[in-house]
Amino acid sequence: MTVKIYGPTQSRAARPLWIVHELGIPFEHVQIEMKDTKGADYLKINPNGKVPAMIDGDLVLFESMAINRYLAEKHNKNGMLPASLADRARVDQWSYWGMLELERQLLTILIDMFMTPPDKRNPAAVAEAQKALPKPFAVLNAHLQGREYLVGSGFTLADLDVASVCSWAKLIKYDLDSVPNVKAWLDRCLARPAYKAARGGK
Image (cartoon, rainbow, N blue to C red; front, side, top):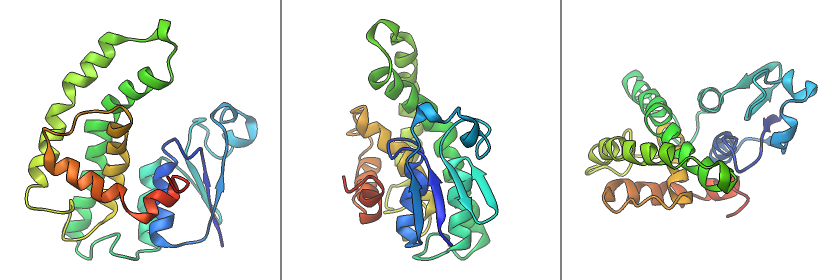
């Protein structure tokens, strides 16, 4: 049975696309355009009218982190989820942290920079987001001191989820020189063949 992943590569759909490549499972990428997410057919899959969404047999899921956790649980290969309950909880902790502490700020800057007409841009919102980012990046940098990955000694779902959020820092050319552990870790994660495959080989 083939998993279906809905959404453009340049969206949060990149997260489940990354994990299916890491897990080596068959999948179909349905390249729905953002303008079509409000159509009646897609709203039956994700009533929020957003991407990504996933269909696996009778199961329909939306929210990228929920999709990734489900796929990691069902096809746990390559150390994607640690063995211990405590370490799995740490995976969840960091995955949620990435969304709650970093994603909104990075997305605010990204949308303003690349998706907003010049006359509609909001410099105040961008400045506020820029001001908020050093604190969570410092937390991440401190945690990565002496570590290659977020949980345990190998790449896990925590790294995939958080790195997928942090990858936006590269798009907006956010300066990571002040957090060298984050910079090295992010480069390590984004150099993985599965990440490049999820992005169309880029």
